[in-house]
Structure formats: structure tokens, C-alpha cells
Length: 298
Ligand code: GRG
Image 1: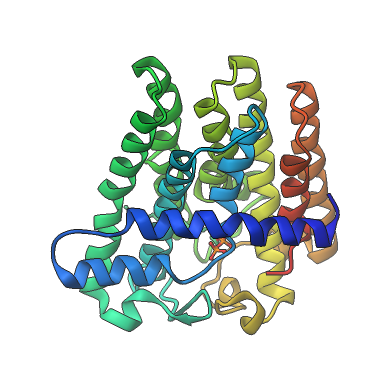
Image 2: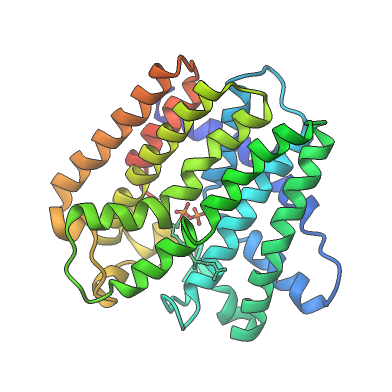
């Protein structure tokens, strides 16, 4: 799949993903919470994680039933609440997200914090209901869901965030930075394709291969994020560029320089594609998405 075909694929896939997000965010309860949730979720974004879930499912089946999109939406909800929390003044303090005011700028810090907190149980609920609607037996449900919970938790995304905040102003080696980002960004991206494949009934060997695929893709994605923070524009990225410098954050672009960081990202893409081959997974979509992680410009 080449650049324009991939762009069309991503545009096409985001339609049912966005529809699923609308479906699962008809949140009951306080009006203000529901507004904050919908504002954060409707902000656009590339929808890479949910598209990876669907591509992971399709690598093992031909048709994709509606609850798979709900499962994909559950992962996007986790990603979205992490962005809302990440932008808060107590964390990265960024007023812009997805090309418009961050949720706390639009609704205030307290409302944004609460809306993001509401999305934590919502994501679990949506994922559990999707598994039930797919008719997955209990043992398979655990195999589908537990790695997602682990990726979002203290050993994954939350832990990586804490390490990232703690490292501000410190010089880091490349392996130290990789360790942070394998958790902070890589864990959730890493589990996405595996989540879809597990729901489709893939075997242990394929799931292991997809875990390795996702980890390498996640790292390629983060290295590219660091590069775009230096060479990208706020208009194209929809978030403030140059934040790593302002926050004195170590970055792959800063430590390795832009060109070596690009080569580093390409090596990770090769590792991701090699993992697919090793697991005998033939999916032009997953292969293209790995390339996209490093070649994207937004
Ligand atoms: C406080 C419970 C609690 C959890 C939050 C804040 C946090 C813990 C984790 C932050 C994790 C984080 C923000 C990682 C950044 C990952 C990253 C590169 C985000 C940008 O992803 P894109 O480019 O964004 O896919 P779009 O907008 O396209 O979806």
C-alpha cells in the first residue's frame, strides 16, 4: 500500500471509527462531564490506534462486525483521556490539542480532569460490552482485555508519563529514552493490533508477533513525534511545536539529531515488518501502518 492509497484507507476507516465513538460516548450523568467527553473525543486526531485494532482483526477475518469498531473506540477513549490529562497545567501544560483549544482551556481544569477521569471506566465498559457482543468466551475475553489494561496502567502509559515528567531537565541516554517511550506511547500503540487479532481468535504465536510489531511501531511513532516537534508546524500538527525544548525534555531528535533519529525510526519500522513476517501474518494494512508511523507529517 503506497502513500495515497494509505491516506484513502485511513480516511475510509475513520468513518466507522468516528461513528463508534459517537455511539459509545452518549454518556449519562452530569451534562458538563458528557460535554467534556464529547469535546475531547470529537477533536479529530489521526485515529491510528483504532485503525490498528481494525487492521489487526481483519488480518484474521474477512468481515468486521460493528462491535470490533466499539473495541477500537475503547482504545481511542484511553488515548483521548491520556491526552486531556497530559495537556493539563500540572502536566505538559499545553493549551492546544488537535488544532483547537485543549479541553481544560475550553471547559476549565476541573471539568477537563473530571471528563477525562470519566473516560477511564467508560473505556473499560465499552470494551467489555464489545467483547460480549462479539460472543467471545470468558477465557478469550481475558486474553483480549488484560493486555490493554496493563498497557494503560502503571507498568505502561501511566508509568511512562511519570518517568517522562521526572526526567524533565535531565540528560538521558537513548536506551533510557526508549524505556520511557516504550511505556508512555509504545504500550498503547503496541497493544492495538494485538487487541483486534485477539478478538478475531488469532493464536498465541501470532499475538506474540503482533506485540513485537506494535512495540516497534510505537517506538517509530514516538521518534517521529520528536522529529516533528522540531521540523513540523503547529498548523499541520494541531499541537504546539517546540514543546520538548520549552519543557527541557530529552528527545530522540535532540540526542541523536534529526537525520539519525529518522534512520532510527526506519529501523524500528523494519523491525515491525519483520515481526509480521516472523509471525506469518500477511496484512498489507498492518505493513503500511508501520511505514506510516515513521513517514507521517502530522
Ligand atoms: C492521569 C489516569 C491518568 C492517565 C494519564 C497523561 C498520561 C497518564 C499519559 C500521557 C501519555 C501520552 C500523552 C502520550 C503521548 C503519546 C503521543 C505521541 C500522543 C500523540 O498521539 P497522536 O499523534 O495523537 O496519535 P492524535 O491527536 O492524532 O490522536
